[in-house]
Every structure is written in structure tokens, then in C-alpha cells.
Length: 285
Image 1 (cartoon, rainbow, N blue to C red):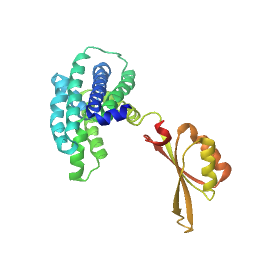
Image 2 (tube, rainbow, N blue to C red):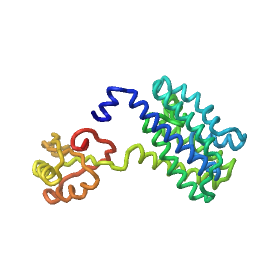
Image 3 (cartoon, rainbow, N blue to C red):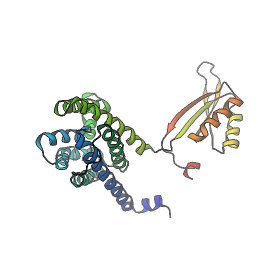
Image 4 (cartoon, one colour):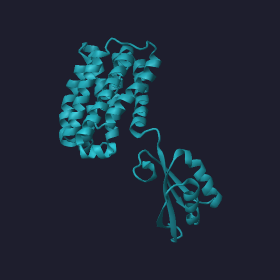
């Protein structure tokens, strides 16, 4: 029995698996904050960033502040996201609070640039693991779902606007250099989160329009050992029937595919889109 089928038959297997990954993610996040960012006056965005500023001013425990500020947003998520998400988000915040206190006196480096880059990388890994396991650490994302509908803003616009305010506040409380380093950390962490969420082995979704569709399709099947699907279309200018080829390949196969297509039909139209997750077919192997 595979792990996937076991998880389907016993939902508790997936819950425990999620909690384990969330635990690791929260510990990694706590390590990034207390060992890289906090000692060097670098902040994160969202609720964590707000909590870091307030904690610096009031000397109140950072872990408790994050829990207190996030609690209303976690409760708000109950209606929007469901009980499972709320439970796993609350659990992630509790583990983060514990981890922050555990790592509170462990400083990795005093070099601000190193702390910015590596703190962002480690932070991105931790947050990415939590998000991938259906949890969250940032209540502002939950709030943005509500605010965006009421005021006609997109989720991204609301989060960006809030973070601009947070980094301006960081510039006043710490220094403008700290604010700039904080923005750099946020950028690095965001890219790492995307990598954790989407994976390193992204595939390519390819659509090919050619008068030699049959020949190209057979060549791709024969030379690349891939499956192709033929779609019917109509040319917008010519009004003639067109055959389209659709397939998903790995990044390593991309160059060879283009060579095969060009050899058969140099005028073929090829559209390539990143695909971060695939299920079934040869990719299940």
C-alpha cells in the first residue's frame, strides 16, 4: 500500500504528517528570527514584523506578542478557511512562540548582510514548510481576504500596502538601513517560499501549433518517450482547422524538444508554461 493510499484511508496519517512538518517549519522560522534577524534589527513583514517592532519598543516577549496579535486573525479564518486550517495555524504559532524563546540567546552572525541573506533563506524554508502543510503564521494574509472584497483591493495590494507601512515604521524605530535590509530579507524569503511550495523540479507545459502536428507528435513520442495529446483548433486569421499538440516535459528535455520541432517545421508556434505540480501519467513514476 502506498503512502498516498494509506493517507486517504486514514486521514489521521495526513494530519500527523502535516503537524510534523509544521513543527519543523515553526522551529526553523523561530531559529531564523532569533538567530539572524532580531539580533541585527532586521524585521519580517506582516504580523511578525509588527510584533518585532512592538517587542523592541516595549521589551515584551516576542513569541507571546505574535500569538496575541495573530489570535483575532486566526479566529477570523474559522469561517473562511475551516477548522483544520485554524487548528494547524494556531499550532504553528504556539510552536513558533516556544522556538523563539528557545533560540532567544543564540546569535549566528553579527554581519548584517549575512544575517539578511541567510536569515531570509532559513525564514523562507520554515514559512514555506508551514504553508505547504496547510498552516500559516501571518494573520494579515487572512485579513487581506476580507478587506480585499470589501474595498475592492487585491490580496497582493493589501499585503504590499501593509508591508510598506511596516517597513516605514521599522525605518523610524531602528534605522533606514535596517528597513532596507528588512526589505531584502523579505524578498529573499519570498523567493525561497516559492521554491519550497512549488518544488525545484518544475516541468514545462508545451502547446505546439503546426501544419505538421502529426509528424511532430510522432517524433516526440519516439525520440523523447513522452505522451502527447492532440487538440482541435481554428485559426483566427485563416479560419482553417488547426491541430494542436499538448504535452508536459521536464526542463532537461526542453532543448531537445525544440530541436525536434524546428527540424520538422521551423515555422511552428510553440508556447511554454511552467508547471509546478503534475499527477498521473509518466510523471507519477
